[in-house]
Length: 147
Image 1 (tube, one colour):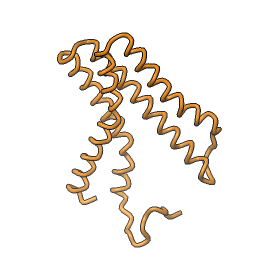
Image 2: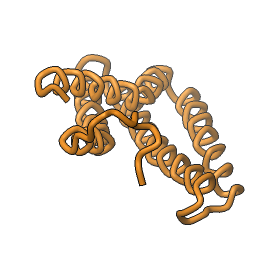
Image 3: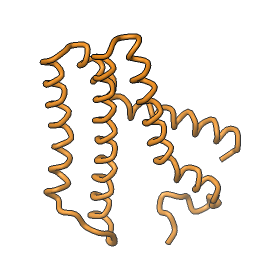
């Protein structure tokens, strides 16, 4: 079955498909590396409370990223004629649970330490930083290899 998003006159490029198909795995690796580096950098620069907040924020960002991927897969399964279907209620519950966990975590950290809250909020941007790294890497490789 042809890809509906691919132009009819565009030639298939298996190397490009393989490269761009691995983006999600690269984003996960970027998230692990950036999270570890941010936590280690925050420790001497801002202290253990901020570093702990960064670590917790990165963990929540990682969970959020994984759950978001699952939610997108569930929605895709519901709108396509093939695939396994998940209940709408569980998809919505997971979607709302993500934000409830972030709010509860931020409130609990705010009550204990303002420095930890700053670190937590910074750690929540882990996925954004990883996606920016992936975009830069894809631009570099596509210019270098002509993909």
